[in-house]
Length: 125
Image (cartoon, rainbow, N blue to C red; front, side, top):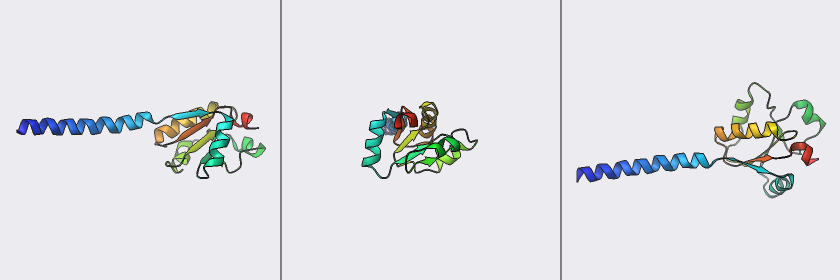
């Protein structure tokens, strides 16, 4: 009887460990087109619009309501970690390279819903 109980407890703990890990593994960045980004932003006012370009690029033009966090800042990861991880995030840069890298950082930080605008601000214009 004790042996069966021990096997049952091991099975339960193993299942819980696997379940927790598989949830983390499913977290990923969804690459979207500009039209999809516009739809997401229009439908959900809680979306964080994250611009990862430089301040100079931001001043030349940006999406209304965007939060600027320069990808090249030494403390980029710490600044991004202060955002609400439970809100959807649409990330963009100039053309898609920095936002792709930023998306991976947000994934590692535990953000739940991340969208990378494929063509960046160039595509938005």
